[in-house]
Image (cartoon, rainbow over all chains, first blue to last red; front, top):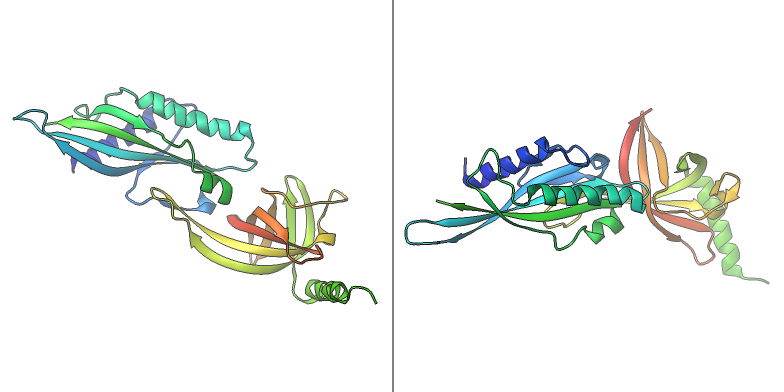
Length: 142
Length: 121
C-alpha cells in the first residue's frame, strides 16, 4: 500500500474510533458519489487529494500529503438547530485531528487543517443537503 | 367580453386536471392531502461538486392552486414539503426544492422536487 492510502486509512480509523458529538462511519473513497436518496444518513468520506515533495536537508525527503474529508447529510427542515448539529460535528473533527498523531501511521505529522468554506451553498440550496469539506495535510519525512 | 385568454387558461387547467393527472399525496410534516398532479420534467442528474458528487432525480409536478389545501386552508408550497407518489408496490418520495406559478393567471403551481427516498407499500 502507498503512504497516501495508508495515511488515509489511518485517518478513517481515527475518526471511527473517536468520541465525537455523534458517531461516524467514515470510509475512504477515490470518487465519492452518492445518491440523494442515500443521504438521509450521515456520510463521512476521506478522499486522498495530493502530494507536495521537498527536501528538508541533503539526506531526507519530505512529503506533504493532503486529504479531503467530506461530511454530508440531507437535512429535513434546514432549521438552525438541525444544521448546528452538523456544524458541531465538523468542528469536532477539526479539533480532534488537530496536532493528533495517527495511531496506525505515527510517522505522519499533522501540519494543518483548512476549512475555507464551512458548507457548500449550492448543495444547501439545490439539494437541501449539508456538505462540508475540510482539507488535512500530514507531513512524512523519510 | 372579458379576458378571453384568462378564460382559455381556466379551461385548459380544468382539462389538465381532468385528463392528465394522477393522485399523489402532498405532505407537510404530519399534515397530508391527496391532490391531482401532472408529472412534468423528470431528469437524472449529477451535481458537479469537485470533491463529492451527488446523483439525484429532478421531477416537476403541476398541481392546481385550488387543490392545495392543508388542514382546511389553501396554502402555498414550502421547501421541504413532500410529494408521495405510488408506483407499483413502492412509494416514491419527492421533496419540494422550489416552486413557481406555471401560468400567468396563477392557477397552477409548478413544484420543483428531487427524489429523496423510496418506501415499500
